[in-house]
Length: 123
Image 1 (tube, rainbow, N blue to C red):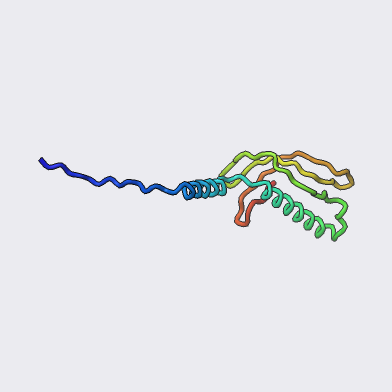
Image 2: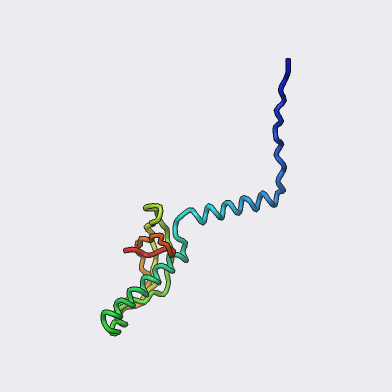
């Protein structure tokens, strides 16, 4: 009777620092792919949307619309919920001065869509 011996590979111990580095790298990669827009993504998208609206209004009114556009001073992300793989509904707080009004913070819901150039505020 012959007994076959199959070699079983013994794992090489990974140094503790290398293990930590692998875990941290994996966590960062997962977080980067996990989806929802960051606070800076939201602020960038809202400010770009406001600038685009101001430019359109200025073009339509031939430059006389400056007093009719709200001025956005800041954006704070409150939270987001996933709608699709590329879209999130987010609650934000806008620090703005409305036309002919006083500066204040206004909570509102906004939809953000992941485009080829980053996050876009959609209506």
